[in-house]
Image (cartoon, rainbow, N blue to C red; front, side, top):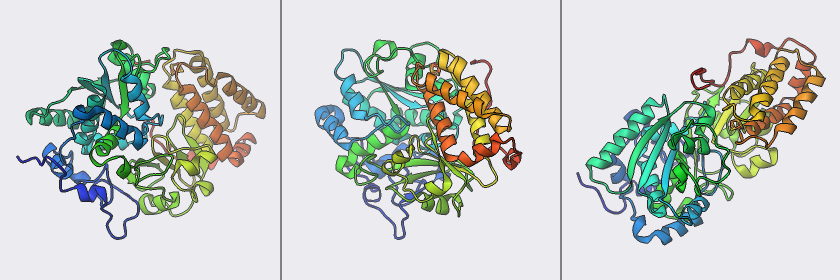
Length: 453
Ligand code: SF4
């Protein structure tokens, strides 16, 4: 097998390739994409040989750490798991303290409707591992751990095969292993991942110190999302200026989004190269030809409902969404279809999120069940204005009081529901029968696992 040592033949495609009529977004294997460039879905995981032939070999970050650290900083790459925390800032913290650093690839992807990390792990595992190896070299780490949820069978198989391929080719670098954790919403939270790797329950930590400072067994630990690391692999190869030719000023680089809910192919993942009108994305890739009743952006917890008529005319860019209280977050674009009810759907989601808390602090133990119960009553037309006022007061009183941001995420979803579906709230408060009650649930909710709880 011959592996080119500089740029591979795919460089032009990744670098500039835009086919005539290119829409500004695409699926795996389509022209003009970056992270998803390469073979199409049907081909399965890209082999190491194909990956290196397409993109060229890994730059040697270890030989010039400071130059690459500066490049990563200039790229303004931020975490793509939803937190948007700058990668370079974490790296700076981890390299400023004593201790053997550790890199953790967080492939938990706890958002039930999001598929982008799974798509990368299953189709482009070497791109993700490249990013992890490069980050480890920049931090001086000798070890990388890929964390997956139990049940991510395809991702696990693809990553383990990729690790074996790298080892049989004699690629040197940090030791890479896979650790499988419980499949729960909060177990993908960074501090829960760190706790699990330290031999404890996968529950968010009360320790407020950042993992980059004091992580697994006290070691500086860089927990990074899968998509973030895939971007890093390309930044290191093609540079920060190239990286910033996609995306927007606030969110440089392309963005992976998952289309969910009332779309023709729920779970399809697209790479969006630059801010595109949301309506264009929905018309051409989701089979949605008119503004839907509502759009859920950014995930369940911490996600935001927008009125469909408003979202239809916005660009998918944080610059446009933030003034309306929304953001791209983890890249979930969820469509509430005609005939479904935003109140009933939110009641489903909030009941799920309340069940998924780790049950360690007051806001989750005594607050979320009450919010969930009140939303269920509203959905059934049984809540009074007084109940709703009490629920809002409770939401205010528990905001910011959890060890993690889980309760805050639930409250953000709740508050956006009342803003986006104010007419439906009034309708339900009158005790009217809602036709949406006959509509099946729109967004996926994993089944319960009583063992964990
Ligand atoms: S706020 Fe909730 S989810 Fe977060 S640590 Fe406390 S109990 Fe767990």
